[in-house]
Length: 159
Image (tube, rainbow, N blue to C red; front, side, top):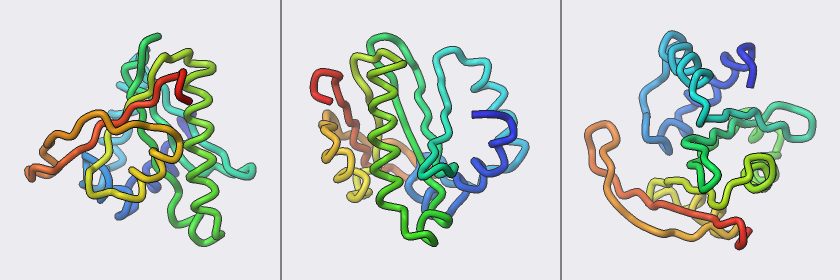
């Protein structure tokens, strides 16, 4: 991730369907995004990567709380561009495969963890296909409304 990636990254993140599947659903302003990026760059436990699919930037992967034991991850894709080109499903699977390889390769993690809104069945299914196990369900407030969340985990030995 580089500073000049910020505008496209914010555009992808502000896509209505990406916001609807996120824990922060409001439209992120340029100022808010810049503030987040400054804090993220200074955080030694966070990594943000741009995922390239077929030689084109196609998504963002974030690892937070990185320690040798584990990290939490999240991602989003360029929904408009990938849907127009008919490459959304292939890019999504490619991103997931690359994110797992990076977690257990260069990052050297023992476990990769994440959270998914319980009603986001397509994402839950994709994670299960890649070996993630649903380890807990709990409630979290999103825009002041309690929502069911599923915690997922993939251990290195199961990847």
